[in-house]
Length: 322
Image (cartoon, rainbow, N blue to C red; front, side, top):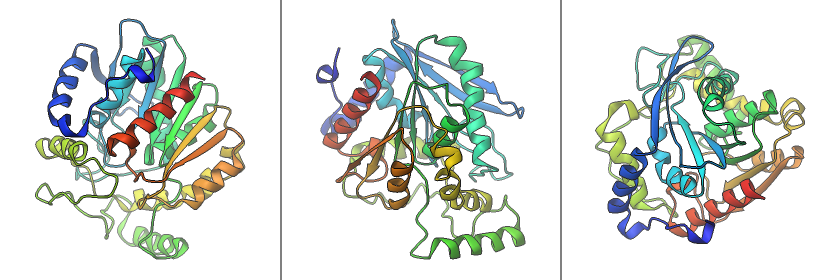
């Protein structure tokens, strides 16, 4: 089966089709919890077709959760790939590091990369013996890049989408934003809610973003509104502080020159969540990276319109299979 044989879900009937897809995936689904080296419990689930040609490990972005990637899992399993998902710390059904469960806390991005390695060792590698492929988005993209540098032999190929190399900073110079966040951190502590981080509001009306598939976005919002565990949104001071330090860490030779895995980096031409120039610089500095810009796409590529999503999937499959 090839890309041209995929029965894509369409925006016009997505709300009906995704119900059928989720029911079909249930027959392929395994789930549980694993314990990281730090002794914390993280939720995972995976889908295995009858015969597997390899495994795709998905690392989600900020505020996301495994269910957001079910449509992707449906397409990949149809192509013969097993798909492994997990909720990162502070997300979905996994462990929280703060007293307020809705807060997203990051003690260190290296720690999140270690969680990914623990997942591979505890669940993925004992289950699937074929080649491993990575799909990592936004904050998960930062985690994925660190992991590729720290554990360069694990993945055969990697796709990194809209990577968080440097967040947008509300028109403030990044160094000034990081300086202010450092003061905020010293005064209030790292696990407190960042002052300007917005709470999740189930009553907030949907606001259309050009390039978005409204039906896909609403489906994700429905999951979030039905289960408070999917409503992780506001960030802690540490989460913001460490995000602001990613550019220096990820663009250094210790990362860009250590990576041995071929990377396809897919970037959104209309991204308003992360800065574009650091992505360009990473592409120049990392010999294993090949960057493609999707000019009409916004940050969340998998909830874009049909045409953009199909382009993303075609590029992903070509990269894995070449």
